[in-house]
Image (tube, rainbow, N blue to C red):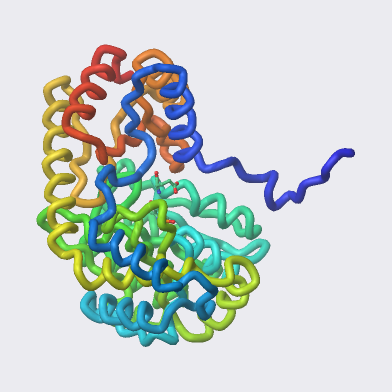
Length: 382
Ligand code: PMP
Ligand code: GLU
């Protein structure tokens, strides 16, 4: 029997970040010593108090379904966190999902249909494109690479790209894969365009807590943006909780109502005891988060210095734990060579819409980072 697949699924590729990381694991299983700088995953354990909270919740029998949108207590804690960021959302305007990826999936599927125009700022995280294409949307892309990945100098290009026909714009600051933190002036420029053309904006703030000496403004705090911004965040990065699968989004109640249907008919809810661990993460982990962010900053400095020592200049990231390394024009072939010959796993820039670069995730120990950069230098950067 031949299965016939939908256009929806055959028109996209698997996640490049996860595919390369799986290849690295495969090589490791074959006994190869791979420095894996591919997947964006903090290498720290989940803070112990959060693990304990999860265990306690499980032991106490919190193992059934929860209300689809998530435990009220968690949504109240999220509302408080958002209020501290300057965003005003009650628990009824929040849905808790198994990972921020699921939040984005629900938002895109609630808002984008065949022929709708969605604008991305390139390089953009791999799953935005795939989700929009699965929903049948058309992509317009604005390239930030000529501007060292800063948004402000690209506002003119953005103005030329968006129009009254634009349905959705996705902004991700701090950015995966560049680590850029967009300035307030840049975000005000985005606001002006969104208001002028009546565009809804998804603000993916999953790296908001991971910045180095700068603050990352939440787009929804800018005047005129409160009712047109959907804010996405999650627990994977700031609290090193990738495998727990916990994220959320906040937005206008009518969106919550529509996206909530996708949510309740697909995942039902995020995992019960994981949600309860999430409350502990929001309320009692400030020190652990600060320690992790300091470690990421040291590693950023180390990698930037090591690369400079090899004559490679990079746009210095101010947040997240990624940077874009300029490599050969055929970045796919370069990354393939880097993993097969130098045994260093990176992700081709073209997966993010920007060929000629490779993304490095520096969420790895200083030792592994030194080894990785040394191997890449021997392999050659182009
Ligand atoms: N947004 C961005 C920009 C990301 O890098 C990730 C990483 N996985 C996500 C969303 C989704 O994260 P998660 O599903 O683990 O919460
Ligand atoms: N977001 C992370 C990354 O970019 C995790 C993998 C994924 O979800 O794509 O590597």
